[in-house]
Image (cartoon, rainbow, N blue to C red; front, side):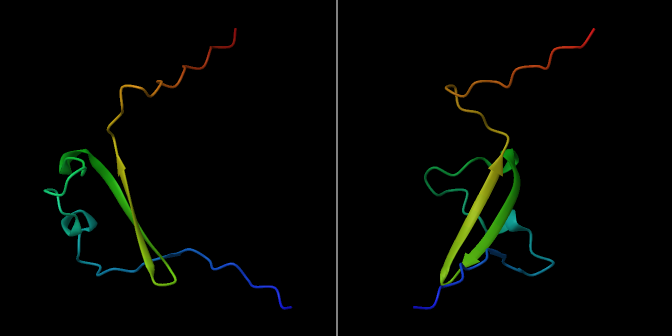
Length: 72
């Protein structure tokens, strides 16, 4: 039995002039506000497409990162 190679994630190339934010539907339920989106990554694996939306929004249950202590 031949071992299958795992498929690599490849970044989907979109039109260079197209802003990834413009492809998002802000009226869709659960979507973040357009001004809170910091970046959008699109990946294609096989026939499936995935869009990862990065925002600066924080949920109330998330813990803020602790500050590093200064060394003396």
